[in-house]
Length: 249
Image 1 (cartoon, one colour):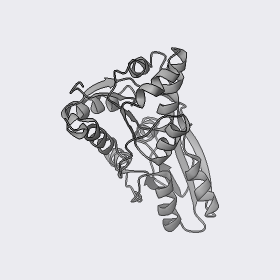
Image 2: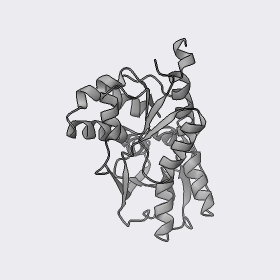
Image 3: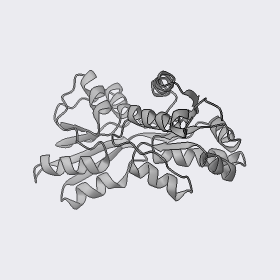
Image 4: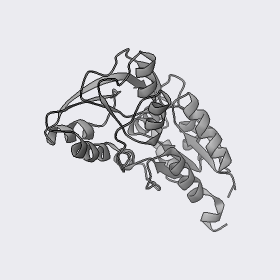
């Protein structure tokens, strides 16, 4: 068996894929970067509300670029990366949930938002229904603004051929959409079944349970879901699992 850990990573083709490559290399893996997401801004800004929820670093950056600032609203961010991006813009962050997920945000906001206050969620067009449904079920007036769309880059899919050929030891999915776009790209190349079969011989990691559920629903065996929903935790856990020492070598 090769001692190389070839790890496919699907983050957007910006600093996130570059950072992912650097991290994987620092862990001793050989990155196979294959961005499965491209950002298409809508030009919208967060709607007026007592609370504004931002669920990604991209959302923060697009809102700031459009000239929006949280002057008349309190700010909640889904996790530390989003919160750090907001603070880098000079914005005060009022809530970051202990669990970095839509469900975690629902719990945190249910405790923080007053009964007469409204919440505006500003995010991509593929946001989880868990957040909106959970807030509304808690009796909180909630609206949504789509700041950007997430589409599959036209040239995505090199990793699907590598998976089909058994040339991956690991794959790191960071959202349900990366799973779906990977499978769509594989289907376009006529290798969907072979790619899924190839992933069965690799260590497949998903950043959280919703992503893992999507992968399993499509027949992909999931080996790793880190306790912390960050890319660093995902990459570290996957590479440790895929390393030869963890296969008895």
